[in-house]
Length: 280
Image (cartoon, rainbow, N blue to C red; front, side, top):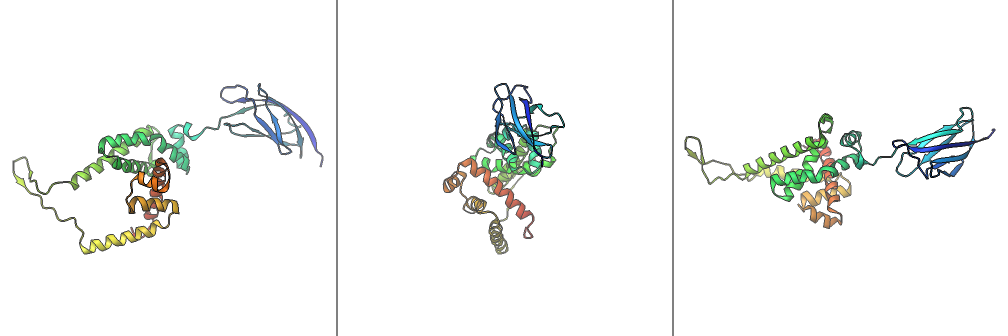
């Protein structure tokens, strides 16, 4: 097979600014050591042509790698290459992250949560006035938002939509809490001045309810066993041993932020298993 040598010259620039990029590495299949661009972005490299063409690869930290086919029949002896920055997830706008999340990117989910977790937490905390409740409600809010992410309309700001979910979720929590703390000793007055004492049946479970509750606990433990050891331990510590986030972090020797993120993921996995379970 005949092998030809072709000398390629050119310049590499930033696609957005048009400024030359110094130190871009240009390699071929036969020359992995390659060459680097000068301070003016210029380069020159000898290429061995097989089957009348060869491939050049341009790589530079923080930019997307580019591959180009060259041939002596196409007049590719001089070229200008524009390289685009490889944007990190943290630099993406919300709508781009949502698109990636809907495509299955766990990193996009994590970035959205990291971006708004503190803001949501402080909004919820002002409503419930208890850090532990605010922590749980914050995670619940993200869980509900992520489960409905395909319903999100790009016509609105993601933050507004997320805060609305968090606020509504907190309102539901407060209502349930108020109902559960209704006094059975104080009579209730109506607009006519009449009073009545509410008759509230005992919340203590009867034997049948107790049996069902115990059976569900057994089933929950069986389903939890289907999770990976890491997530299984988190569920065990949080919901069976009822440890706080700080206690779990100490127990597992993890940063508290990692505990919250991994517990959120564990809840998602458990929810998916439960949703498809014949027991619930």
